[in-house]
Structures are given as structure tokens and as C-alpha cells.
Image 1 (cartoon, rainbow, N blue to C red):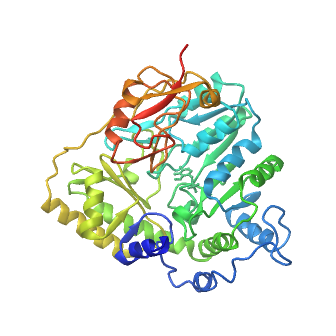
Image 2: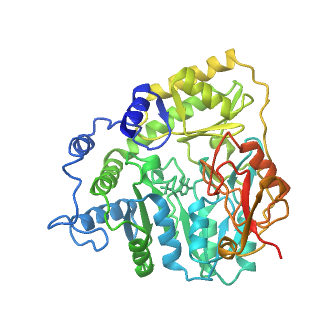
Image 3: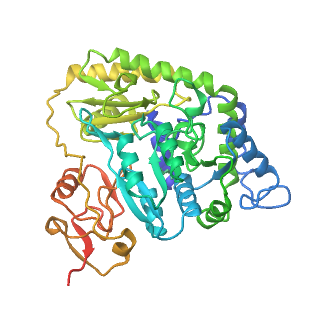
Length: 471
Ligand SMILES: Cc1ncc(COP(=O)(O)O)c(C=O)c1O
């Protein structure tokens, strides 16, 4: 028995995939993707005469990155072969110096926090706006961002997530204008937005709006293999530091299979992206309409204007109901062979992409109706307040490297954490080193324990935690 046999078992379940990667397990008969599959071993090469070098690109890799740059209409495009995480590290640490101040959303992905920890940055949080009906973070208040920029005149950069995991967006253009007036870099975690540029019916691409740099996970929403990502930087930004950091954080043996996959995803978007994405938007919107008078609620364009939501990526489906997300996820997988991307207490999140087929949405609709007819929708699931008042007590890096002790989590109220706790997905830390462990955090972790993977913490069940030692 080998890992591949286990994975083939998943393949043979023939589930409809509403999860990453965006190719959904097939090539859509694109000739070049078929060729990638057929030649997998033969093109898995290394740096020899004619194959160029990702870290000093002058030949075929440079040409492919130039094609990406032209497609995304930016100053520089860099291929990322270990996902967006390495791009987020390189973007932040390539433009900022240790001890610099950065403003970030408290609901950023853990890679942003990790970059701040690695770079010993001074971090100022922006709290997200919560959609109270779905109990998820969906946006930020631009007025609050402006106030924070004014209170932190020494900030070098602001890093924001656009779109969110839930497909919602804030008014990025306004933030860019305000930050630019103050000489602050605007860095965007667009891990979920690689496809936005394909359609005028989606939120605008961050670089097109004037962001200084943005990182995109091609593997999430486009037909690229897992780990394929890209870092785009606008014309006029000095990329010396970013290039250096990319050679620090990326492997010295980048996969030619992955680099080919990045190039092919861009080629497909360039030639067919608009048509495929428009179809995907129609399928998702049809499902939203069909669910209108059901027991399910969805997030769509009609949410714009509520909870500071400025725009919505219609390809992303968030479905909330009183059966609860975790149970709904289990039923969909076990009884209907539909695998969602993520479930929380209340919601399921489904990733729609340009490689979806219309039948996926019909099957999903029929399954949801069947479930609504057969099961009790009684709100008997635990829900915690995600609008947590985070208390940063000491610097993240000092906390991580500080003098610490391990104590039962249930006794940790009021102590300063030396660890992070990250429910995955979506990968937003519920606790960071340097933050006070509050009643709210303890309650949230108690609700999630056993239902969600908690990573970042030494004890995977979070029964014990390292905290700063008190004198
Ligand atoms: C918002 C966000 N940013 C960054 C990342 C990291 O991306 P990757 O998995 O490509 O490293 C993720 C991954 O889940 C994410 O959701």
C-alpha cells in the first residue's frame, strides 16, 4: 500500500469537487493539459542547458513569466512553486525591514502572520466587519482603515485580503488612494482572486486597481496544479528585495511540472478564461436563484452594501442553513458524493471555477433539496462569536521566542500565548503569539476541538498550550 493507492481511492469515489485545486481533477480536454499529464515524468527536469533557472531567469522561464506579466498587465510576474505562502513572505519581507510597522487585517491567513513573525515586524490590526447572518468576516470599514493609517504614520505597508475566502470584497480602490497619499505600500493577499481578471462581472483585479503587489494562488481558482501561485508587482516598484526573498523562501529545485502548469493556466485564461468564467458565474447564480425560497441562504451580489461588502465574487458559494455546516458537509459527502471546500458551524463554502460543469450545480441543487426534505433543520449546532476582541500584549516574535511554559488550555485565561492556533481551513489564526488568551478564545477553541483541524499549536487537540512564563 502506498499514498498513491489511498489517493486513487479518493479519485474512485468520483465525488463532485467543490474544492481546490481549480482544475477539479480533469483537463477539460485542453490539448496542452493532456500533454502535461502524458509527459509528467519526461518534463520533470532540472536546470540544464536550455531549461533556464527560476532564480535567474533568462530563457524559457523568463519567456513564460513575461507571458504572465502581459496577461495580468503588471510590471513584474514571478512564478511561485510553493504556493502563495512563499509569495506572501517575499512580498512583505522584500519590501519591509525588521521592526518596520505593518497594518494587517486580524483575519489574514496565517502566512501573513508568519511573515510578520519571521521579519520581527510591528503589527497593527484592523478588525474585520462580520456578516452577522453567516457569522463570517466579510469586509473592512474603509473609514476605519483611514483612521488607522492616520494613527500609524510610521506604517510602511498595509496588507489586506481581497477577496476573502467567502468571495466578499471591500473598497480596495479607496484604500489604495488613501494609502498612496500617505506613502504606504498596499500589499494584497489575493490568494482567492487569480481568476478575477477574466471577467468584468467579477470584482476588479487588485493590480488593475493600483495595488503595489498581489499574490494569487492559481491552484485555488484556475486550472493549475496544487502549489502553483504567482506574485505580481506593479510597474515602478523596486523588486530587488522581493527577488532576494524569493530565492530565500523558494526551493532551489523548483518543479518544471508546476512551472509548466502555471504557464498553461495563464494560457487557458488568456484564450478561454472569459468564456469559461462567465459560464461558471451563470451556473452559480442559477443555483442561488433556485435556492431563494428554500431553507438555505447564500451570499451573492444582493449582499453588496451590507456589512461593508463592496463587491462579491459570484463564483464562490457560501451556503448557510439551520442544519449546520459540519453536518451538511458530512451528508453531502456520504450520501451525495459532493465534497465541499470547507464547513464551519453554520456554513459550507464551495469553490466554483472555470473547470466546473453545469451538471455539478444541478446535482448539488437536487441534493440540497433532498436534504431539506429528509432532515431536521433545527439549529442544534454550537456557534461562537467570531467578533473577538483580540488583545495584543507583546510582540509576536518576542512571544514565540520568549521564556515559556506548557499549561492546560482550560486554565490559560489571562495568560499571554506563545503559540498560534489556526483552524484549517480557512487558515485564519484564532490566537497568535503575544495575544492574551481570553474567555472568548477559549470558548471558540472548545467549540472547534474535534470538529476542525487546529494547526500551528504543538498539541493538536489544544488541550495544552505554551504561554509566556510569569515571574
Ligand atoms: C487567504 C489566503 N491567503 C494565503 C493562503 C496561502 O496560500 P497557499 O496555500 O497557496 O500557500 C491561503 C490558503 O488557504 C488563503 O486562504
